[in-house]
Length: 185
Image 1: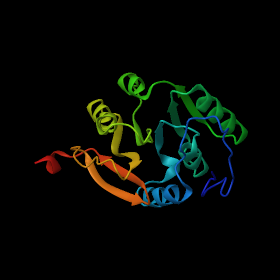
Image 2: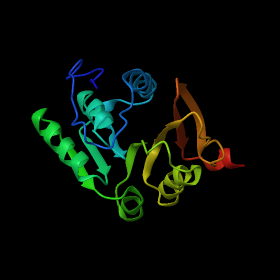
Image 3: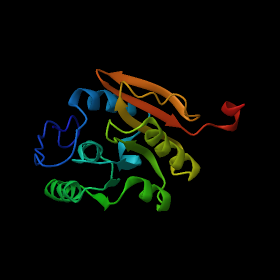
């Protein structure tokens, strides 16, 4: 994997082969950040990276100037790798080794962007539960966005906070936003 833009543009990062991950492809990641670039000044936002895996998405935000980043993964090896890599690159990424659902149920954090990249073999209900908990617990700041990466075989459009999807090959990014009372009527 490589960092697409920012301070560490073109930096290649090699994760250990034994991590149970499926990093977001460079093409899909570049497309995602092109979208986000239209809505946010990266140095002014906070980010929560769920099912962080190798830290691929966290590094991209950090390289672009985001200073408040939280990365959550249940795998000790993943958390250890993110800690090592962020230290080597002098990135301030706060890591949590935790089951994502348990983390979401307890965290007091509110962020501008929440990115979730759960295993593609999750049931649709497991994907939707991520959005349910985030919106029930009000974990997004005003004008914040939740992005869930999933395969083209998963449909999350039934969620009331779903805004739109962007497809890149077999990958889909579903975007969710807080609906204002005007939009709900």
